[in-house]
Image 1 (cartoon, rainbow, N blue to C red):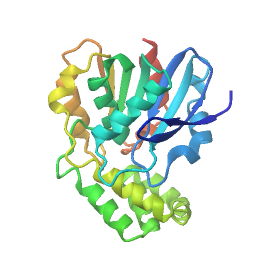
Image 2: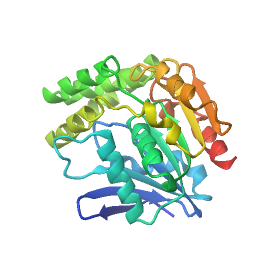
Image 3: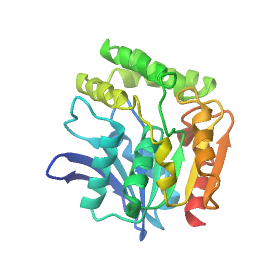
Image 4: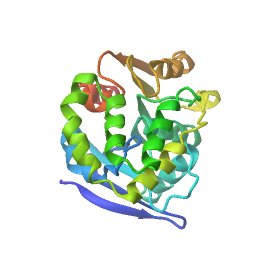
Length: 267
């Protein structure tokens, strides 16, 4: 089955998604904050997760259309959960990366019936002011309308130095395709991270959890993953893995990342 594009419509919003695979189990991916919508990368996502297509039907949800001016993580989680329910999804295998991991935590806390197992990649249970400094820099570039500089700053923080340098020209080319609407959405979504905190609610998560972090995380800091572990490692169904050398976006750069997700889901 090739990629199929869809739109969920509820009484309050519309949300794009795509899906692929033909398996009986449902795998939901919640991507991180991006300069542009991940809907344009559906083919690359399908290729990256090709090994899941036989056992899972894989869904990736974008953020809602028509963003309100203030749109916090809990709002994103509420809308994503509503979209999942509208499609009849439940008992899913959930993977959230970075901001998507924050959304995933809220869904697992507030809607435990929706989640069978959860993987959290390069994310945090809270965003302190020191963690928000990188995002403030990105927001300033977006407000200035300098999309190429934004893409470069984004890549420099997400990727290891060698990969960033190898990707520099591609990032500049991508920056030239950014629209004013892309920047407006990016600013709203980035601002929505500020003040996020579910640290006191992590014990309400009932599903098995794998937290994957990176020691050189220049966006949220490696301590963020370790702090999730400190709250959940008393549980026998919690797992932790930390990468060295792959940067915040290890979920895109580490060659064995998806193998680890598959192994955890298959336990």
